[in-house]
Image (spheres, rainbow, N blue to C red):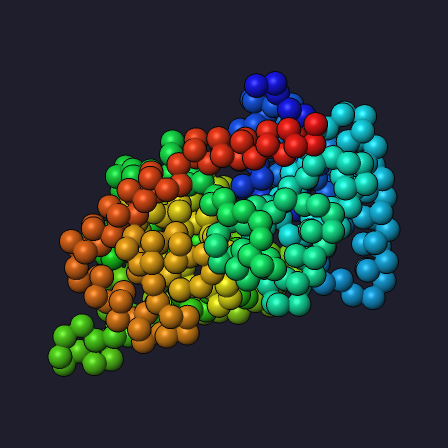
Amino acid sequence: MQPLRIAYLGSSTALDGGSELRLLAMATHFNTVHKVVLFLPDKGPLFQEAQVRGIHTVSLDFLRLRRHHGTDWVRWIRSVRQASEVLGQALMDQRVDLVHFNDFIDLPFYGVPARLGIPALSHLRLITGSLPARFYSSWAAWNRIHVLAVSKAVRKQMLKDHSGEVLYDPGPDPEVFRIRPDQRRSFRQSQGWQDHHLVIGMVSKLLENKGHRNFIRLAQALQSHRQKPGEEGKLSDRYRFVMVGGLSPGRENYFQEIAREVESFPSGSFAWMREQPHAEIAGILNACDLFLHLPDTEDSFPGVVLEAMACGVPVVAHDLGGIREQLADGEAGCLVRQGDIEGLLQVVQSLSQDPERRHQIALAGRERIEREFNPDRHFQALDDVYHQMVKRKR
């Protein structure tokens, strides 16, 4: 088939979130198939990495959509207006066939391809309250945006009449996220942890709704739980904990709160890896015996859950958003009701005492990654969507 001219647009250049990583993966893959240009708000980490990968990348110099205050709204409106003009001219100059928006926060630019008569689609990777959801659904329809929801939960809660299409995000790079006994040994040795220690991990951006408090509360409960009759008050030495997540802009107070909690753990029992390149996450996951994902709000389709599954680590997660779809209603991982700390504690303790059960869950997770979230099939399905949209326009 004839190569298409595809423009991708994202509103963040951080590289510590799943949305940005998915955008980079799409642009990287299709840059070898089509003529790709990537539009970003600034020259941050994602911009730099895209250029290293040979992707034609353009900075539109705009502020991202967020809860602005006072005159910041004026600055935001002005920046989006100017960026929209630059984007529109670039789409015409480069005779772009299709525009692909990466997420919900790109919606201020939906009108640009609509005015130019260029087909456009957007991934939807977010679950919000009912009012923003109604606005999004109407705005996307008004601008003729074809929406790709990353899970059935996203489509159900965000799109009126359950319109749009569901296309699951693919699993991670199988060359990076796979079972690696050498990485398991290396990370454990770096922390002074032994084979008999049961390591429990968490990976997430340092935001209040991501569940760091839940992870810490569980860790505290596991350490203080008596192991044998007569050992009341004695801290358990069996468990070790690793948490990955660095400081997010505007979250300094939350960062300090988490730091105080982590400092309360016995020396050597809790590793907080604050800044980690994404590729190194695989080594940390391989060191874990259990992976926990415990958000306080709906999570659309967390990529880190797939990464843990790909590394052969059994997952225990809150039953929120699209997580149930990832874990096959609990067949490829354990689901716990959000807020049920006692239920979570029981599940983790049960699994910690049952290595065969952990192995079976890990095996089911690996099989599900290979069967349902194959990257090649995902990109082929997405390419089919591209060609169908352009064909309808022509």
